[in-house]
Amino acid sequence: MKILKAFNLKNAIYHNQSEGNILLVINRILGLLEDGNWLDFKVVAKKSELTESEAGAILDFLTKFRFIELDEERRRVKVTSPVLRFLQKIRQIER
Image (cartoon, rainbow, N blue to C red; front, side):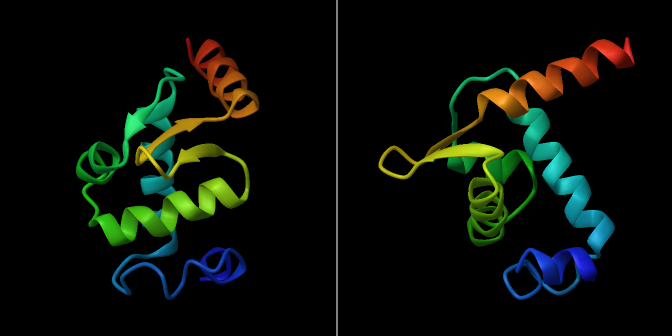
């Protein structure tokens, strides 16, 4: 619960989620965005198997810490350039 508390996610996400599950969801979301393109907010929620409220809480967290850019007007998100480069490096190492 330390991570959830530290990042203010504890109350924002349904209580059945464990800390490990939250990290898996964050990983899944970043995986959806690793092509660097904008992705509709609803698509992120659906593919992450989250409600829009749950997805919103995690996306707010990722935005706050500059992992992603959030276009509120068009309700879409994309990974920031530094995070995109980081994800690409990880994929290179994994090969």
